[in-house]
Image 1 (spheres, helix red, strand yellow):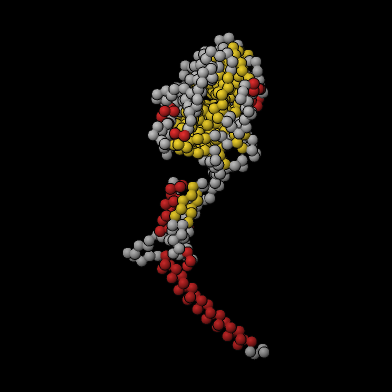
Image 2 (tube, helix red, strand yellow):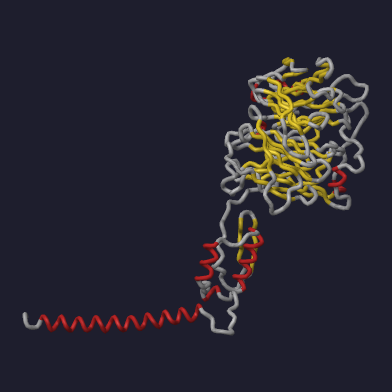
Length: 517
């Protein structure tokens, strides 16, 4: 045994060397074959598979951006995987989904090289929206000694520009009523055009847990018919019409699941789409309430505040595409929750719980502070309205949640008005009077701007037909001489006095989810 051991060891060593040599030769042949398959010979063009081309076109169309470097390097190094025999010539359709967009292609081979990021879909319930023949819609009937709801549409108005006279169908919309998580109509924002011909409503889509989008509904206030209905895949919490055009500005809240930033969305109402999005790149406060944000839109600029400390942001229009957003900023003494251009158009008034400040509005965009008046309100004003065309006489209203009375200021003298939880200051009859809407019992006081005395008052809860829900939006429509109210249950109605009648009347324009009879 001792003499045969060295012989056995020597034999094993020779076998190992021979095996290594054979394995190395086989590996070299395989490596050479792979390299030859990856490197085309001179003068030979390697065609990209048809399915791979289609997938690349889909990726460019949806994202409008080149593939990430990692995806490009992987697609360059790894050949497209071959399909299974049963799938190689089936010719069946295959769906490609990116976000809420689905594209169907008929590939011959499996793309395999394009990596698409799957974003959660926004569930859009369209059961409350449908298209109906224009001839089937019955106009609102008017009668004597009854509150009038309709009026003549002015020529050249925004509603006329957005109405397709040749269309055979028109949209029919009523607000959906949510019963899970939140009870009521999911109406997040409202705006009335400068000529009062168009009412814009932002209705939230998606589930209570998100992600969410927004359905924009545009009403012609002369006949209360919807003229445009379209959706945007953003949460819009503030709306304002850009004067002199068909653009609607909106404050968009961020959504992490959709990788959406906080910013300003510019909506083209004629084309029914988002025209541009201007991100506001700074930390977002999740506790921020929409009523704490102030938004003023002018022909040449958009001004907003209340969301980033005491900084006021100004964006000058138009914004050139593919360029940095031209931000201008200035500071107020405390976060400004109400902004208003003074009646002379030369200054911007910024109101906060501590003061009201006036800043120059000039083409140089320096926004120099002209004056400041200390207020020390103790609550954030959500509405600011100037009286009698004077820059020093104004009314400030708190949000409903503050349970505080509105304040009138004249020449730096402060006085509280009668009533609590006022949420809206409404110009009446071309600003000859002012309406103040209160949450308690849905009360609206009509105030004389000169004497600051209530010349009339009404209680919404006492008017029939009865409706439930607090006021979400109130405005006065001069054409029909009536207050128009949209409540938290989605009801829309008008309140006014018919000609020659001293009593207030109420007429339902459309019913929401909960209406008493």
